[in-house]
Length: 67
Image 1 (tube, rainbow, N blue to C red):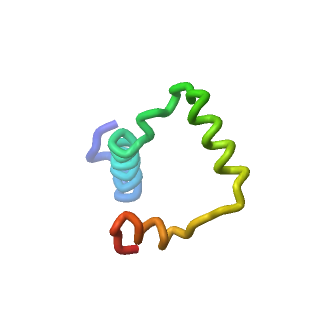
Image 2: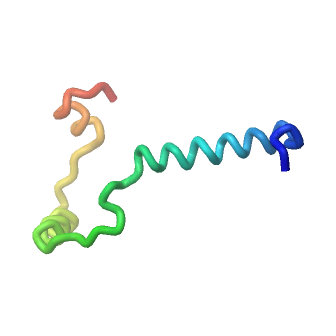
């Protein structure tokens, strides 16, 4: 199929798919598929077991970001 044969909606969907794929490549998780180390696993379990939580606003403030 030639590009000129596509409808406007088909072209939009094609471009959207290409952009989505590229963004996943650029912003994807570089650790995807890697095994989690025991030390990280233990810290994650400890963090999840804790009732202490901070808000997104608090994180942004600590990092000097505008939310």
